[in-house]
Amino acid sequence: MTTISIRAVGDIMLGDGPISLGFGVNSLIKSKGSQYLFRNVKKHLRNADLVFGNLESPLSDNDSKRTFNSKIMIGVNDSVKGLNISGFNIMSLSNNHILQHGIEIAKNTQEILNKHCIDTVGFSSNIFNSHEKIVRKKGMTLAFLAYCLVPDVTGFSYTKNIEKIKSNIALLSQSSDHVIVSLHWGDEYIFYPTMQQISIAHGFIDSGASIILGHHPHIFQPIESYKGGLIAYSLGNFIFDFTFLQNTRYTAILNIILEPNGIKDFSLTPFYIDDEYSPVYKYELKRHFEDLNLHYECLRSTSYVQYQKRYDHSLDKVKKINEIKRFHHVFSHITDYEPLYLIHLSKNYLRKLI
Image 1 (cartoon, rainbow, N blue to C red):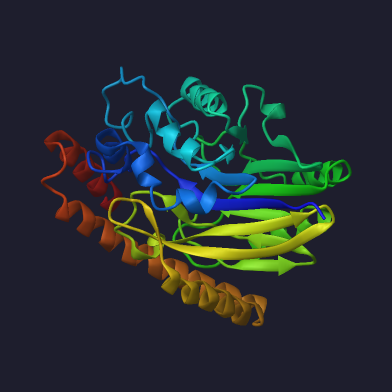
Image 2: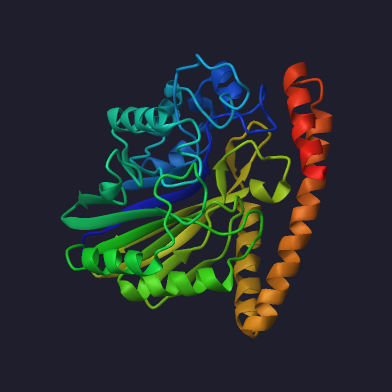
């Protein structure tokens, strides 16, 4: 029977993060090239029929603006080469950063990807056509859908209409072998989805989706099998300069084998994001992902109230811890920042305290 192999990964951010300006991902690309970032992982990706990821930063060579905000979370056009040589051929642009530098740069990002044979879903100059992409491979029809559920003005296809998404899934499932839904959603830096996310994901599978691919939390979350479908609540970071947060370094490639009538198999290939923001294969992390799923199953066996109580406690705890780690990161790199940008960061931090 004909099968299609899919490799899916998490957030790929090819710019410098807000507190890594001058020594983040984009700075490394400018010195070593984007291929360098993917040197350890491309052999695990490019042999698949479809390689999917979420591009968390727009791309542009237009550096006419000189403000600090114009320099963060944006990569250069040449960054696409690393994606291309690694086999990426479809990417979601439906996230809360695609419009961070304006609609024209978002359009440029899509054009650059398309010129390098990378299809996009979740962005279009016509918002009504932005959510879906039909891909035909080996006699199978796959319908990709992408939505941003994070309410941010810099997100392009933000929606809170869950019923409309269900209707779109149901409609496409009638003419496709599989519907694959990319969701930018959830709380950041926590290992588990909310009860609301679980309900939404189950509803999408019930409506006809085969696979849910989640992004945004920067943390790898559980993989759940549900009624023949597969739910990856969050695939975490894949290329990112948030390495000062240890838990964001644990990542994986989700390997899926599709048959016309269902999912034949799936597995994880574990990676660790090193100090140069590059994923490195790490077999020892296999246990981490197994324990993550076991813990999730235990939590799911508790009541709604108990689950939500533990979730809220974990979220509050991680926010406090990460704030300390961010401050430590800035302090430890104090000599790496431009003096004016350091003043800019200090003002922003003080503004939060007031």
